[in-house]
Image 1: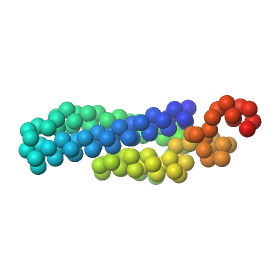
Image 2: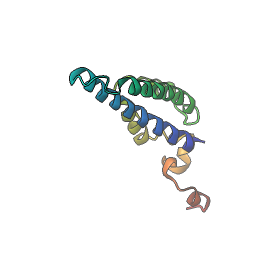
Image 3: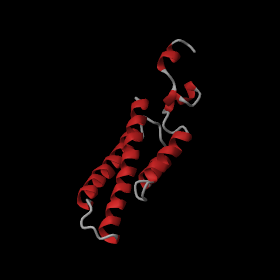
Length: 122
């Protein structure tokens, strides 16, 4: 379950970061370049949906991934600054936070292990 949870979290975190970037570009076009709406209503809605989805996903994957309260709070706070969810996702990947509790049985790299090799005893 933790591999699926990790993949889900990574996809949602990166999507939320890209939606932030898109919204910032749209706001730049609307307010600085003054090209009209610039897609801000649509980009704002997309970002809002992905923001809520990121928060919900973070809370849902915390248990399967074995996150402590500090990691959960950091992940939730990462949703506020632009692109911080992507930074958190990269940090969590490097620190083994996306491997889940069984990571110790696989040397801390459960996310990247080929399941066929695990069953063969390699």
